[in-house]
Structure formats: structure tokens, C-alpha cells
Length: 147
Image (cartoon, rainbow, N blue to C red; front, side):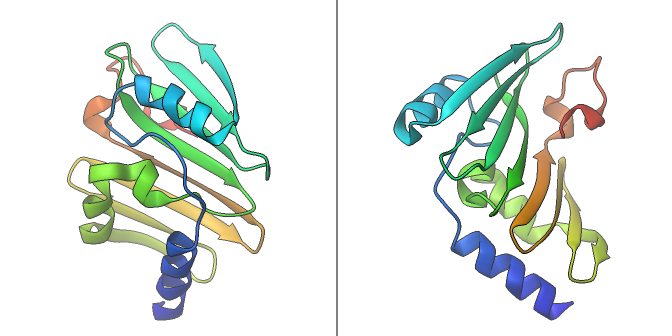
């Protein structure tokens, strides 16, 4: 288990710079998209929007925006784990202090903290994960929308 955590931390520290942080305003997504020169596709649903950012190396990050204009969830998939410090922002502390509720040896981890959920799975060149803040998720949605 210690090896899994060490590998996860190495991937986090060596990951690419990226995106708007959890709990921040939607305007930060546009600034990040311009800085990265990534493609930003926006899908509008009745109760939320999704910004899908695709980088040149094929990593995809989805940022889920509430009707109030806040990022309530992020999800990623690709060859590497994006910068969790950038994705989680102030919620990075929640990741570090959260209770590990599920660990799959050499594959993934789920961490729950105070109003914060983080899940990450992967193996070499194939990573995926998500993080969300339950209190920011619009009331008519389930947590499964963040994928």
C-alpha cells in the first residue's frame, strides 16, 4: 500500500500543468484553455455544463459547471494524471487529509474527506479519475454525473 501511495505522489508531482480548480469560477476554464492551446468543447445540459479540454498529448479533462457558475467536479483520463494541485486547488488539502475508503492494490484509490470525494484508477499510460464537492453538485443531479 505504501508503494501505491508513493507511485501516486510521484505521478502527481511529475504531471503536466493544467486547469481550473474545483470550486472556482467558470471563467478560469477559458483562461486555462487559451494558455494551454487546448481544444475546449462545451456541452450544455439542463442543470449543468461540461467543458472538455483536450491537450496535444491526448489527455482529456472534463470540468463540470453548476448553474451558479462554479466548478463542482472534475474528471480526467489519459496517458498521465494531470496536475492535481491545479485541478483541486484549495481542495488539495482535503485529498491529503481525507480518509482512504477504498484501495485496490497497484490500481486505484478512493478518498473521502469533509465534503470532498476523490477517485483515481490507472496503470501505465492509462489513468482516469474524478473529484467532486457534494455540496456544490446541483440538487437535481447525482454524483455519478461526474465521470
